[in-house]
Image (cartoon, rainbow, N blue to C red; front, side, top):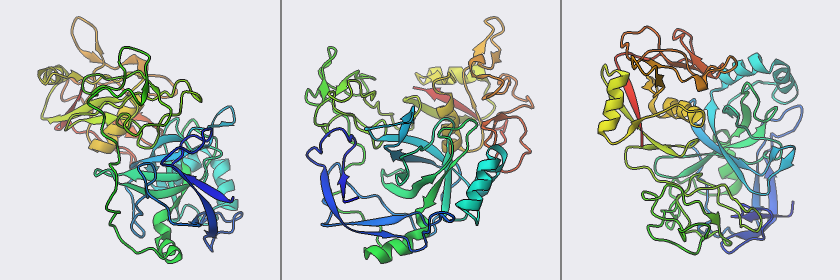
Length: 419
């Protein structure tokens, strides 16, 4: 390792303006790192031969507070150029959303679903178990993989600031089923070492010229960033046109569209003819965008509102009751839990056409992964409710289970409307 390149998202493309390459002056591994049989303190600092120049494409992460504790289930990003399929690495940077898993719960999941691997890890890698030197994170069907080690785990707050909280360390069987969380070096545990090694001041003040985290979408046609493939010459106001259906331009013009993913930009068409990145449709105030579906949702909290009444409530607002289709089920499940905490939402299933009684959406039910349990939201006093069993990664009707179930309340009924 002799140099580093900043601001690049595509390894097959030479650095473009706004990107930069630096020689390495020194590498400082943590003094406690010993590798196997002890993989704690798997973290290092690289010193470049000259100060990094910040641009619109190169900007620092914030650091967490010393020993800062992040909440269970927190949605965070991971990124890297690791294996994506068939043991092939990707020239394009890959990003994904995962949920933090509290360490004691992470250990229970490992013992239940990966006992052999867990015994091996605790014997040869983490002999003291999952200490505060580590973070756990995972999500069904999503994981870091070979080649991602050393990549960042970061969180974006409500003000758009990105804080790096972890470094990808290790795991087993990328995207395992059932899910087994991966391990990450906990940066908050090494804050003193970071400051003492770098000599940077302890401050929470970002540089004065911090660019906007997510570029605002153009309200006019911009012929420079998109390659014309239909009547639209560039991206329109996202409130007018949901999907630009454009390919990306050479040069990765920073005026493209609002981020769908906060870190990924599209490659040049000479490398990838379809960057698989649609223009981001911004959500109106009060709505959230579900990462998995790119749709906007708004939650209404009501007292004793039936499913039929919930549909009318959404319709009165010019919306529709959210539908748990295969495409959005996982995203809705995660967002409901993270954004709204305890409680549950009526999600539009289907009726028999005669009695208009709600029934579960059968597309989400399988013997191996029962995402939704039966229930009748028209029956307000029904004893059954929806609760998420994180250890099984399925919905459960056992609210007395400790640690990982979220009991529902019939007194507080959430109506989830879809924009």
